[in-house]
Image (cartoon, rainbow, N blue to C red; front, side, top):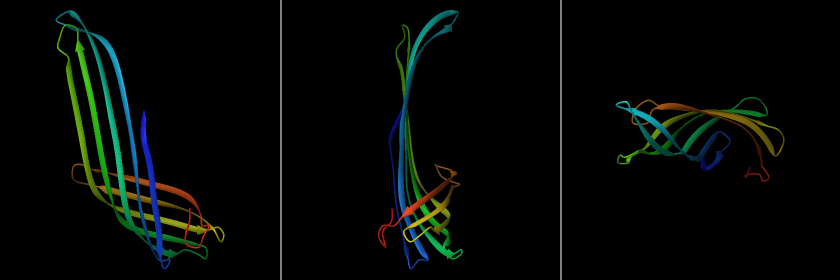
Length: 168
């Protein structure tokens, strides 16, 4: 079952060459299941009922600086650096009910948050006086600590600017 999901970001430019971008997202979800089995214990059948459930939430917030370079008359390319903060929280609960035995329960939780560097490559092309299109590719690598790994985020978009300094 998918839980709450949201995403936000804002970006801007100082003198057309120095850009900034802040943003964040959250994805969460849960799942559960149950079942019954007959286990063999010392050649005796032992009916067992069980259930398990779990939750996961991932939240990230980022801040990046991008240096824009002319890439033709109507296009710009950008290289950027920044930071991202990830927070991951999980919870798993389980319960076993062997017939004629005490109920066995277990809950495991894991939570971690970490900062990681961001590298960004972007390209924008003007499509008219109020429209532009582009893509960006962001790479995050966290080689040490409790949360390790790398992630790539790619985006393709079209922007409309109804006012000179405001776009959607």
